[in-house]
Length: 317
Image (tube, rainbow, N blue to C red; front, top):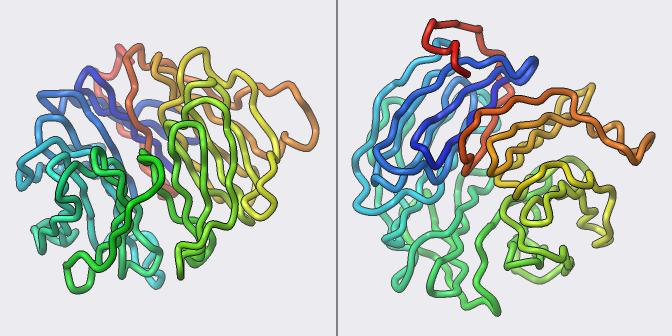
C-alpha cells in the first residue's frame, strides 16, 4: 500500500503506507502540483504547468507525462473495472479550461475531450464506480455537470445554490455523492440528485474521503479530521487537531484490520490513523507520521503492496 503527495514546491512524494518509508521524490512539474490520483501500480499528478505525470509505484519510477492539456490540471481520477480492481483502465482529468479529458491507461493515449464547464474551470471530479459517468463541479460557474464517459459527451448540468469545491461518490456501488461548499456538505442520491443530508461542518472543507457503511471523512481549515454518518447526518467521531495547519488531503484505506485513514497538512506533515481507536479513546495518536518539509497540496493512495526501492537521493526525505 502506498501514499502519493503533491506539493506547492513542484515535488511529488511517494511513501509506503506500512511504515511511511519514502519510495521516491521527483521534481516532476515546473509549477505547483494541484492534484494527484493513485490506483493499482500507478499514480498520477497534475500541475499548474498544464501537465500530467505518471508514476509506476512498484519500481518507484517516473513513467512519462501527458501534455494534452491547455490549462492547469485541477483534478485526476483513475478508473478500475470491478472485475480487475488493481488494474487501471482509464485516467480522467479536469482542468481550468473547463475540459474533462478521458485517457486510456494502457497505453496512455487521449480518447476524448469534453467541454464540461463553459464559463469556468473544473474544480473537482468524481468517477462513478461503474466507470460510465463522472460528476464535475465548476469553479466560476456554480454548476454540477454529469459527463457520459462511454459516449464522451456532457449529459446533464444544473446550477447549484453555492459553488462547490469538492465532489465525491460514496457507497459500495456509488449510490450517493457528496459536494462540499465552504463549510457545508450536501449528500445526494445518485439517481435523481435528491438531497439526502445537509451537514454543517463549521469551517471550510478542503478534502473528503468516503469510508465504509456510509461514512464520509472531511478535513479542512479547522485542522480536524471528522467522520460523518451520511445516513443520519451526525458526527461519528472527530480527530481533534489532527494537524497544526489546514488538512489538504485525506485517503481512506478499507483493509480488514486495522482500518486506516491518512491525512496530509499544508505544513508538510502526513499522518496515518487507526480508525478503530474511535470507540476506545478521545485522545488520538497517529500510528505513523512523516514530515516532507514542504507545502503539501494533495494526497492520494492505493492498496497495492509496493516493493521498497531506495536511492541515495532520498537521504534528505
